[in-house]
Length: 281
Image (cartoon, rainbow, N blue to C red; front, side, top):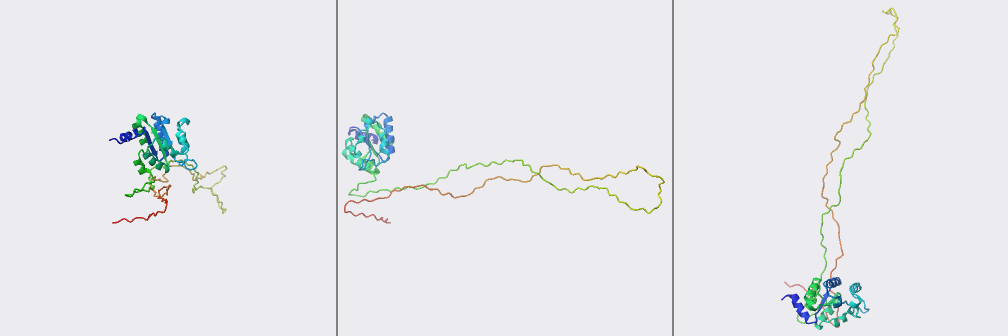
């Protein structure tokens, strides 16, 4: 038989009141929105949170948040002096009610929906919103388990562990380009030039072969020198190789992790053996 239909048939005998427990009040908030969007009147939705002796919600901050989802006329049951006492007039059968009361003692939120003929639809919405709808489901969810006389029950203590993932991302870009830079260079070049040298020697008074004077006679002596001429031509002054290499490094990452620890509370003169059991081969 379909479990949703079976659950619906069981609840139809209880004036169509469907109780749903949410360990996370955020899921209860979403369930209220989903039910309202599906056309379920908010007047038919009840909400209960555990309160301490001062009348404050044990689920800090969620009382006002859930209250804001209802108008003043829609939350009469929610404004009860003791939210757990609300269960007594929410229409929940007594055998179911004690399980939901125990669940509320550990926190979370309880919704009730007067679904009428739309029980199947309401059940589907609640289940999709992560609700616990039966006492059997609550036994597995509730951190406080009732010990039977005929056996033992196991409580799992959960803990969080860190899992590290690496994603390859681009950390930057390097662009290489050539740029022309001018600089002044001086080069010393040895050069040679000719200079005129005149040497005079005294004569010995011998007779000259010429008989007349040569007025205005001149001689020309060409003088030369090295002239420096500069020209520029391109040469390869350097070669650059561009590549990538893998550099291995170590980074330290961390985060806060939570874990569950067992707390034992004793009432009366009882002995508790909490020593670890050895596994037998």
